[in-house]
Image 1 (cartoon, helix red, strand yellow):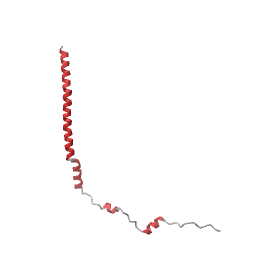
Image 2 (cartoon, one colour):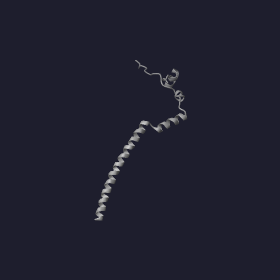
Image 3 (cartoon, one colour):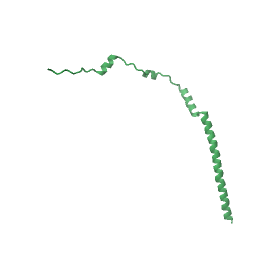
Image 4 (cartoon, helix red, strand yellow):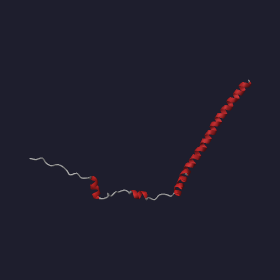
Length: 97
């Protein structure tokens, strides 16, 4: 009784793929990507300028915050200057007496 022949013929995967033909891809091809519509240089410049300008709402918010910050600084300065004036007056009184 002989052994069974369980050898399998070798199939070249590259040759098999070539025999099947080009594969059908679901997505866009490289040519589609390269031929896509792109903005002109002027349109790109306009978009960059719009980004630099920013939104109106953001500008209003920043302006409001700046005003609040200025008011807060003025109050803080008044406290410091008011405290310094009273302490300097005390020093003058101490020096004079």
